[in-house]
Image (tube, rainbow, N blue to C red; front, side, top):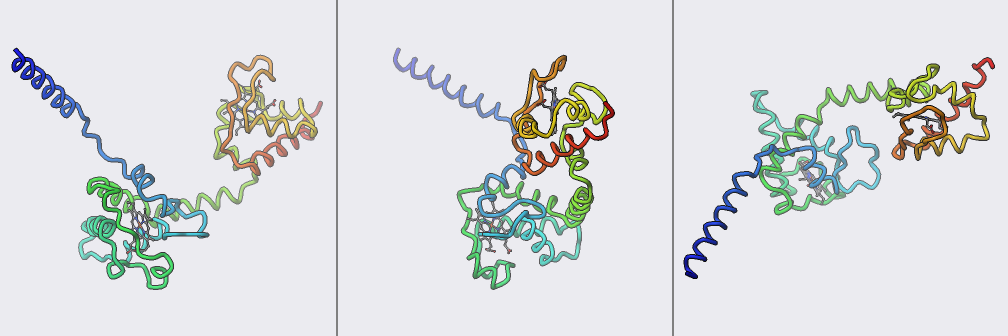
Length: 241
Ligand code: HEC
Ligand code: HEC
Protein backbone atom coordinates (compact mmCIF):
# COMPACT_ATOMS: atom_id res chain seq x y z
CA UNK A 1 0.00 0.00 0.00
CA UNK A 2 2.78 2.38 1.00
CA UNK A 3 4.77 1.56 -2.15
CA UNK A 4 1.73 2.20 -4.28
CA UNK A 5 1.25 5.54 -2.56
CA UNK A 6 4.85 6.58 -3.04
CA UNK A 7 4.66 5.43 -6.63
CA UNK A 8 1.54 7.50 -7.13
CA UNK A 9 3.10 10.54 -5.51
CA UNK A 10 6.17 10.28 -7.67
CA UNK A 11 4.04 10.01 -10.79
CA UNK A 12 2.16 13.13 -9.75
CA UNK A 13 5.43 14.88 -8.93
CA UNK A 14 7.08 13.97 -12.22
CA UNK A 15 3.91 15.03 -13.97
CA UNK A 16 3.96 18.39 -12.20
CA UNK A 17 7.61 18.97 -12.96
CA UNK A 18 7.10 18.10 -16.61
CA UNK A 19 4.12 20.35 -16.96
CA UNK A 20 6.06 23.22 -15.35
CA UNK A 21 8.87 22.72 -17.81
CA UNK A 22 6.55 22.37 -20.79
CA UNK A 23 4.66 25.50 -19.92
CA UNK A 24 7.74 27.61 -19.48
CA UNK A 25 7.46 30.15 -22.27
CA UNK A 26 10.49 30.41 -24.53
CA UNK A 27 10.52 34.19 -24.56
CA UNK A 28 13.37 35.95 -26.28
CA UNK A 29 15.72 37.81 -23.98
CA UNK A 30 15.46 41.59 -23.79
CA UNK A 31 18.96 42.97 -24.41
CA UNK A 32 18.07 46.46 -23.24
CA UNK A 33 16.63 45.31 -19.93
CA UNK A 34 19.52 42.93 -19.32
CA UNK A 35 22.11 45.60 -20.10
CA UNK A 36 20.43 47.82 -17.51
CA UNK A 37 20.28 45.06 -14.90
CA UNK A 38 23.75 43.62 -15.42
CA UNK A 39 25.99 46.39 -16.65
CA UNK A 40 24.57 49.80 -15.66
CA UNK A 41 26.03 49.85 -12.18
CA UNK A 42 29.42 50.51 -13.79
CA UNK A 43 28.70 51.63 -17.37
CA UNK A 44 26.58 54.67 -18.29
CA UNK A 45 23.97 53.68 -20.90
CA UNK A 46 22.86 57.07 -22.21
CA UNK A 47 23.52 58.10 -25.78
CA UNK A 48 25.25 60.49 -25.57
CA UNK A 49 26.29 60.07 -21.90
CA UNK A 50 24.96 62.93 -19.80
CA UNK A 51 28.15 63.39 -17.83
CA UNK A 52 31.67 62.02 -17.73
CA UNK A 53 32.18 62.95 -14.07
CA UNK A 54 33.14 60.25 -11.57
CA UNK A 55 33.19 57.58 -14.23
CA UNK A 56 34.16 54.15 -12.96
CA UNK A 57 33.98 52.63 -16.44
CA UNK A 58 33.69 53.98 -19.98
CA UNK A 59 30.11 54.53 -21.20
CA UNK A 60 28.57 51.71 -23.23
CA UNK A 61 28.36 54.13 -26.15
CA UNK A 62 32.13 54.74 -25.97
CA UNK A 63 32.82 51.02 -25.55
CA UNK A 64 30.66 50.04 -28.52
CA UNK A 65 31.94 52.75 -30.88
CA UNK A 66 35.47 51.82 -29.92
CA UNK A 67 34.99 48.11 -30.57
CA UNK A 68 33.21 48.73 -33.88
CA UNK A 69 36.21 50.79 -34.95
CA UNK A 70 38.94 48.45 -33.82
CA UNK A 71 37.42 45.14 -34.83
CA UNK A 72 37.71 44.85 -38.58
CA UNK A 73 35.90 42.50 -40.88
CA UNK A 74 36.42 42.05 -44.60
CA UNK A 75 32.85 40.93 -44.92
CA UNK A 76 30.50 43.62 -43.53
CA UNK A 77 27.80 41.05 -42.82
CA UNK A 78 30.13 39.35 -40.34
CA UNK A 79 31.11 42.50 -38.48
CA UNK A 80 28.24 42.33 -35.97
CA UNK A 81 29.06 38.72 -35.09
CA UNK A 82 32.74 39.51 -34.64
CA UNK A 83 32.02 42.40 -32.27
CA UNK A 84 29.40 40.35 -30.42
CA UNK A 85 31.86 37.47 -30.00
CA UNK A 86 34.50 39.80 -28.61
CA UNK A 87 32.05 41.22 -26.06
CA UNK A 88 30.85 37.76 -25.03
CA UNK A 89 34.42 36.64 -24.43
CA UNK A 90 35.65 39.84 -22.80
CA UNK A 91 32.87 40.11 -20.22
CA UNK A 92 33.66 36.61 -18.92
CA UNK A 93 37.45 36.64 -19.44
CA UNK A 94 38.61 40.26 -19.37
CA UNK A 95 42.30 41.06 -19.43
CA UNK A 96 44.65 43.94 -19.92
CA UNK A 97 46.04 42.34 -23.06
CA UNK A 98 42.65 41.85 -24.72
CA UNK A 99 41.21 45.24 -23.84
CA UNK A 100 41.02 47.82 -26.61
CA UNK A 101 40.98 50.52 -23.95
CA UNK A 102 44.08 52.74 -24.17
CA UNK A 103 46.73 52.26 -21.48
CA UNK A 104 45.97 55.45 -19.56
CA UNK A 105 42.27 54.69 -19.33
CA UNK A 106 43.02 51.13 -18.26
CA UNK A 107 45.28 52.47 -15.51
CA UNK A 108 42.60 54.80 -14.25
CA UNK A 109 39.62 52.40 -14.50
CA UNK A 110 41.43 49.16 -13.79
CA UNK A 111 40.57 46.06 -15.84
CA UNK A 112 36.88 45.17 -15.74
CA UNK A 113 36.16 42.43 -13.19
CA UNK A 114 34.92 39.21 -14.82
CA UNK A 115 31.12 39.02 -14.85
CA UNK A 116 31.15 35.22 -14.81
CA UNK A 117 28.22 34.09 -12.67
CA UNK A 118 26.41 37.44 -13.06
CA UNK A 119 25.32 36.87 -16.61
CA UNK A 120 24.61 33.76 -18.70
CA UNK A 121 25.87 33.14 -22.24
CA UNK A 122 22.41 33.66 -23.73
CA UNK A 123 21.89 36.86 -21.78
CA UNK A 124 25.25 38.13 -22.93
CA UNK A 125 24.38 37.30 -26.52
CA UNK A 126 21.21 39.41 -26.26
CA UNK A 127 23.11 42.24 -24.54
CA UNK A 128 25.90 42.29 -27.12
CA UNK A 129 23.53 42.34 -30.13
CA UNK A 130 21.54 45.10 -28.48
CA UNK A 131 24.73 47.11 -27.93
CA UNK A 132 25.82 46.68 -31.55
CA UNK A 133 22.45 47.66 -32.98
CA UNK A 134 21.68 50.54 -30.63
CA UNK A 135 24.95 52.37 -30.21
CA UNK A 136 25.32 53.47 -33.76
CA UNK A 137 26.79 56.61 -35.34
CA UNK A 138 23.73 57.34 -37.45
CA UNK A 139 21.46 57.08 -34.42
CA UNK A 140 23.74 59.35 -32.41
CA UNK A 141 23.70 61.96 -35.18
CA UNK A 142 19.89 61.87 -35.25
CA UNK A 143 19.68 62.25 -31.48
CA UNK A 144 22.13 65.16 -31.53
CA UNK A 145 20.23 66.88 -34.35
CA UNK A 146 16.96 66.48 -32.42
CA UNK A 147 18.60 67.83 -29.26
CA UNK A 148 19.87 70.92 -31.00
CA UNK A 149 16.50 71.48 -32.69
CA UNK A 150 14.81 71.38 -29.27
CA UNK A 151 17.50 73.52 -27.66
CA UNK A 152 16.83 76.31 -30.15
CA UNK A 153 13.12 76.49 -29.29
CA UNK A 154 11.61 78.77 -26.67
CA UNK A 155 11.12 76.80 -23.44
CA UNK A 156 7.31 76.64 -23.61
CA UNK A 157 7.42 75.26 -27.15
CA UNK A 158 9.96 72.60 -26.18
CA UNK A 159 7.85 71.55 -23.18
CA UNK A 160 4.79 71.28 -25.42
CA UNK A 161 6.77 69.19 -27.91
CA UNK A 162 8.28 66.72 -25.51
CA UNK A 163 5.56 66.33 -22.90
CA UNK A 164 2.00 65.12 -23.09
CA UNK A 165 0.41 68.47 -22.06
CA UNK A 166 -0.99 69.00 -25.54
CA UNK A 167 -3.02 65.79 -25.31
CA UNK A 168 -5.36 67.66 -22.97
CA UNK A 169 -4.48 71.35 -23.21
CA UNK A 170 -4.30 73.79 -26.06
CA UNK A 171 -3.18 77.40 -25.89
CA UNK A 172 -6.50 78.96 -26.85
CA UNK A 173 -9.11 76.25 -27.05
CA UNK A 174 -11.04 74.84 -24.09
CA UNK A 175 -10.64 71.06 -24.36
CA UNK A 176 -10.53 68.21 -21.82
CA UNK A 177 -8.43 70.67 -19.85
CA UNK A 178 -8.71 74.46 -19.62
CA UNK A 179 -6.68 76.31 -22.27
CA UNK A 180 -3.47 77.96 -21.13
CA UNK A 181 -5.08 81.35 -21.84
CA UNK A 182 -7.99 80.45 -19.54
CA UNK A 183 -5.50 79.49 -16.83
CA UNK A 184 -3.66 82.77 -17.38
CA UNK A 185 -6.82 84.81 -17.01
CA UNK A 186 -7.94 83.01 -13.85
CA UNK A 187 -4.68 83.41 -11.99
CA UNK A 188 -2.10 86.12 -11.29
CA UNK A 189 1.59 86.17 -10.49
CA UNK A 190 0.84 85.54 -6.80
CA UNK A 191 -0.48 82.09 -7.77
CA UNK A 192 2.82 81.09 -9.37
CA UNK A 193 3.72 78.61 -6.62
CA UNK A 194 0.27 76.99 -6.67
CA UNK A 195 0.47 76.47 -10.41
CA UNK A 196 3.93 74.95 -10.06
CA UNK A 197 2.47 72.65 -7.42
CA UNK A 198 -0.46 71.68 -9.68
CA UNK A 199 1.94 70.56 -12.40
CA UNK A 200 4.23 68.67 -10.03
CA UNK A 201 1.50 67.02 -7.99
CA UNK A 202 -1.56 67.16 -10.23
CA UNK A 203 -4.85 68.95 -9.72
CA UNK A 204 -8.53 68.15 -9.56
CA UNK A 205 -11.69 70.01 -8.70
CA UNK A 206 -10.33 73.49 -9.33
CA UNK A 207 -12.02 73.82 -12.70
CA UNK A 208 -15.72 73.27 -13.01
CA UNK A 209 -16.86 70.75 -15.60
CA UNK A 210 -13.45 69.12 -15.99
CA UNK A 211 -14.05 65.43 -15.62
CA UNK A 212 -10.51 64.10 -15.78
CA UNK A 213 -7.99 65.08 -13.12
CA UNK A 214 -4.71 66.75 -14.07
CA UNK A 215 -2.05 64.03 -13.63
CA UNK A 216 1.09 64.74 -11.59
CA UNK A 217 4.37 65.36 -13.47
CA UNK A 218 6.83 64.44 -10.75
CA UNK A 219 9.63 63.55 -13.16
CA UNK A 220 9.50 66.88 -14.95
CA UNK A 221 12.52 69.12 -14.49
CA UNK A 222 11.83 72.01 -12.04
CA UNK A 223 13.33 74.64 -14.33
CA UNK A 224 11.00 73.52 -17.11
CA UNK A 225 7.97 73.65 -14.79
CA UNK A 226 8.82 77.12 -13.49
CA UNK A 227 9.62 78.44 -16.96
CA UNK A 228 6.38 77.00 -18.30
CA UNK A 229 4.30 78.58 -15.52
CA UNK A 230 5.97 81.95 -16.21
CA UNK A 231 5.04 81.53 -19.86
CA UNK A 232 1.40 80.73 -18.94
CA UNK A 233 1.23 83.82 -16.74
CA UNK A 234 2.79 85.92 -19.51
CA UNK A 235 -0.25 85.09 -21.70
CA UNK A 236 -2.31 87.43 -19.51
CA UNK A 237 -1.13 90.41 -21.53
CA UNK A 238 -2.45 88.86 -24.77
CA UNK A 239 -5.94 88.43 -23.42
CA UNK A 240 -8.38 91.30 -23.97
CA UNK A 241 -10.72 91.29 -21.04
C1 HEC B 1 32.05 46.28 -11.79
C2 HEC B 1 31.98 47.21 -12.89
C3 HEC B 1 31.64 46.66 -14.27
C4 HEC B 1 30.54 45.91 -14.62
C5 HEC B 1 29.42 45.39 -13.73
C6 HEC B 1 30.61 45.75 -16.05
N1 HEC B 1 31.75 46.35 -16.54
FE1 HEC B 1 32.39 46.37 -18.48
N2 HEC B 1 34.03 47.44 -17.97
C7 HEC B 1 34.31 47.91 -16.70
C8 HEC B 1 35.54 48.68 -16.75
C9 HEC B 1 36.21 49.35 -15.56
C10 HEC B 1 35.99 48.67 -18.09
C11 HEC B 1 37.22 49.39 -18.70
C12 HEC B 1 38.47 48.60 -18.53
C13 HEC B 1 38.56 47.43 -19.44
O1 HEC B 1 38.53 47.60 -20.67
O2 HEC B 1 38.65 46.31 -18.91
C14 HEC B 1 35.01 47.88 -18.82
C15 HEC B 1 35.10 47.59 -20.17
C16 HEC B 1 34.16 46.88 -20.89
C17 HEC B 1 34.28 46.56 -22.30
C18 HEC B 1 35.36 47.08 -23.22
C19 HEC B 1 36.56 46.28 -23.47
C20 HEC B 1 37.46 47.03 -24.43
O3 HEC B 1 38.28 46.33 -25.01
O4 HEC B 1 37.40 48.24 -24.63
C21 HEC B 1 33.15 45.86 -22.64
C22 HEC B 1 32.81 45.30 -24.00
C23 HEC B 1 32.35 45.76 -21.45
N3 HEC B 1 32.99 46.38 -20.41
C24 HEC B 1 31.10 45.18 -21.43
C25 HEC B 1 30.34 45.02 -20.27
C26 HEC B 1 29.04 44.38 -20.25
C27 HEC B 1 28.30 43.89 -21.47
C28 HEC B 1 28.65 44.35 -18.95
C29 HEC B 1 27.38 43.75 -18.37
C30 HEC B 1 27.18 42.35 -18.66
C31 HEC B 1 29.70 44.95 -18.16
N4 HEC B 1 30.70 45.36 -19.01
C32 HEC B 1 29.66 45.07 -16.79
C33 HEC B 1 33.57 47.68 -15.57
C34 HEC B 1 32.39 46.93 -15.48
C1 HEC C 1 -4.71 63.94 -18.98
C2 HEC C 1 -4.98 65.31 -19.30
C3 HEC C 1 -3.97 66.37 -18.88
C4 HEC C 1 -2.63 66.42 -19.18
C5 HEC C 1 -1.79 65.41 -19.95
C6 HEC C 1 -2.14 67.68 -18.64
N1 HEC C 1 -3.15 68.33 -18.01
FE1 HEC C 1 -3.00 70.13 -17.07
N2 HEC C 1 -4.96 69.98 -16.50
C7 HEC C 1 -5.81 68.98 -16.87
C8 HEC C 1 -7.12 69.21 -16.25
C9 HEC C 1 -8.35 68.34 -16.41
C10 HEC C 1 -6.97 70.37 -15.48
C11 HEC C 1 -8.02 70.98 -14.56
C12 HEC C 1 -7.82 70.33 -13.20
C13 HEC C 1 -8.74 70.82 -12.11
O1 HEC C 1 -9.94 70.92 -12.35
O2 HEC C 1 -8.20 71.07 -11.01
C14 HEC C 1 -5.60 70.83 -15.67
C15 HEC C 1 -5.09 71.96 -15.09
C16 HEC C 1 -3.83 72.47 -15.33
C17 HEC C 1 -3.32 73.70 -14.77
C18 HEC C 1 -4.06 74.62 -13.80
C19 HEC C 1 -3.96 74.04 -12.42
C20 HEC C 1 -4.65 74.89 -11.36
O3 HEC C 1 -4.09 74.93 -10.26
O4 HEC C 1 -5.72 75.44 -11.63
C21 HEC C 1 -2.03 73.85 -15.24
C22 HEC C 1 -1.06 74.99 -14.92
C23 HEC C 1 -1.76 72.74 -16.10
N3 HEC C 1 -2.85 71.91 -16.13
C24 HEC C 1 -0.60 72.55 -16.79
C25 HEC C 1 -0.27 71.37 -17.48
C26 HEC C 1 1.03 71.11 -18.05
C27 HEC C 1 2.21 72.06 -18.05
C28 HEC C 1 0.96 69.86 -18.60
C29 HEC C 1 2.08 69.06 -19.27
C30 HEC C 1 3.31 68.98 -18.57
C31 HEC C 1 -0.39 69.36 -18.36
N4 HEC C 1 -1.08 70.31 -17.69
C32 HEC C 1 -0.82 68.12 -18.76
C33 HEC C 1 -5.53 67.91 -17.68
C34 HEC C 1 -4.28 67.57 -18.15
